[in-house]
Image (cartoon, rainbow, N blue to C red; front, side, top):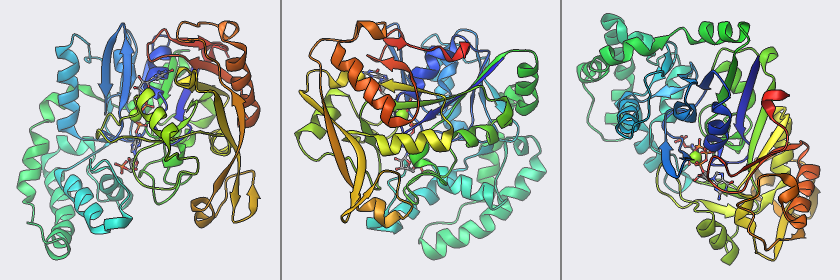
Length: 429
Ligand code: GDP
Ligand code: IMO
Ligand code: MG
């Protein structure tokens, strides 16, 4: 039995999709425990590129059952569009299962996300505009709509009507928008009921039974530690818990069952949307990482902000997620750049911080303290073992391991499924 959690260690887009895709071939279930169609995972299989937004990357593996866990927020229109798109390309999404307890994104959540961002002006979070925050806010306020509600029309009507009683006041009086007719929303949800019904399961029960039978389950977190609503750079975060603990809550798998916590981390750093980012680069190197790394958001098409590797962030993420292993991705992007700076600590107005500052203001003022390592010039995209990497690439990885508080078990040297060096296989840990 293995229960593996895959978690983003930075601000997202570390290559979680690729990591899941590799491990997905070896597991029975791939569960998405949090987030919604704000994610964007690019997976390259046999030269074919797939861009997943709501579905876990496990949907592309031959045998694994992909599951949307109770902690996910589901936009049904986006769900069926994504399934249809994949099936049109020959992929098989028929094994997909959905927790009856997952919440659904209503059209009014999307409207609220956009008007709230506009209202914030310069203080906007830079959300993906997919209604994720308002849907989680309703869940926590106990006025959300769950997947199971769609199969009971009178309950659905009651819940939608009472949610809109309040939201229409806000939309009309605060944001000067038109009121939304509850019947339109009820019809919208009911129109998906027949297609949705056969996919819905008691996910917590099925996943735990699978583990009891010695099967393997992988939890593929969306977003990342620094976007976690508790552990991230609040308020510039998403509205769920993408960290390892959140994966337990969002799938109904208890913490005692987790066998590996695998942190996915780029050999440098990127961020999409607003918020502090100490190692961000505004010079030619930022542009180099953006273009050479192909750093454009899958979901919104925004250019990703780029910077050097931040080992303060890596140590923090290792700590709050209890990482057992790291998967360093995109090492190939650093080939031939001469020198590679690594942030080892922060300077905040003359004070040195070796660990993440607790105060938001300190983090906003954090200046990186760098050490540098020489880069390698050889093409590493064909390397398949650690020993095949040039000595300087090995030295860089060894230093990252030392600074990050966790062993490196996988290294990505290109976007393809096979462009991966396996040092320790988490399935055998
Ligand atoms: P996710 O959201 O964490 O799944 O990451 P994204 O898919 O949004 O972004 C990661 C990008 O890096 C994708 O375009 C991947 O195809 C690509 N990628 C992943 N691993 C590697 C790697 O080792 N090398 C290179 N060059 N690209 C990679
Ligand atoms: P994956 O899974 C990168 C960011 C948004 C914004 C903030 C809040 O591909 O790593 P939201 O729409 O969630 O309320 O936006 O979070 N964000 C991501 N950034 N990768 C993601 O997902 C993200 N999902 C949300 O840009 O700053
Ligand atoms: Mg992404």
